[in-house]
Length: 439
Image (cartoon, rainbow, N blue to C red):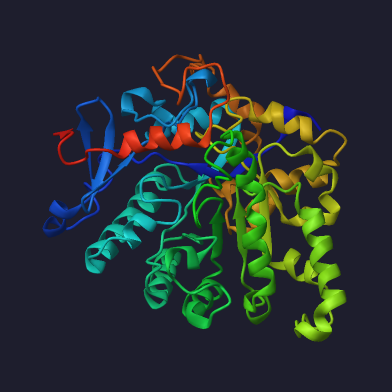
């Protein structure tokens, strides 16, 4: 098999929402309450909703920018590559990267819509959340059928409303929703509690995958104020083990045999030991902890219910049989700082050396198609879906790395610390009432 013959579906990318997101998806009486983009006096663009501001923090959208300009400073849309927020340019960037299809997590609402969940007016929050979903499914994904896996947000403050939205989204052809890795971090019951039963049942009924993105619980994993920020960047994917442990030892996977979870941006290299450890714990301790997997190993149950994804993980690929090759998917993470765009096929190919084509096909697209009930070949012949074919359509896409004037947390020649990053973020969020002007 050649690299150019791969078919790539990325199950974890991100969209920077365009300023006109709510224009076509709200009744007139709600437009005045809608989130809106304003330009601050410092030249940055922020979303304002419910008296709070939400900036396009630079690490969320750095594709096309030189790495030395990465940081957390405020940004304007002019500083971002258009493919981050313009769906037509996104498709061009996907083609240039040889990527057939993409599942896109949100930016300003939070990874699972937590900005809506914290709004004090629940009626307004629900209206805006549904409008966001309509934009995402009908406008963002609907503009290019077969190129996007739609992902819905949910009103997590009410599991019955969550169930209703799961069913509404399913009627629109959306069979993936975003959920938090740690509900208790947001003041809700944990996954061990029956509180979420209506939500679980709706997902089972509709064949909807529950996507859990890193950082959607308590946020970024900072170990110490004076620790290099590299510690957070390193820990973030591996920290998915906390969510994995709670899911596996909760009753959810056993009570709902058809339920499916996706650990998004989790990486896979840590999973062999995780699966080995849970089997050992069960074998040694189930007699007194009373955990019952019906005579099966916990790792077997995990492989039936949970999928994961990786960006660049040669160790995980070498251990794919332990993880379960039928559970592994791939991600590009466009436009975040970890993304391999526009060289994703080349970087992925490094991980897939000596891997049989059957396994390559599962990892690159077949597993994603099966789990997310997604068939891009119904819209585009397979021969036009390969890395080589897509790149042939994008020869005019400019891939030049350009300075966007980004300001890293410090210009000193020393490791950037957690404190540096938090100070930069504090500047980003400061003075919203007095420092904003009309967009």
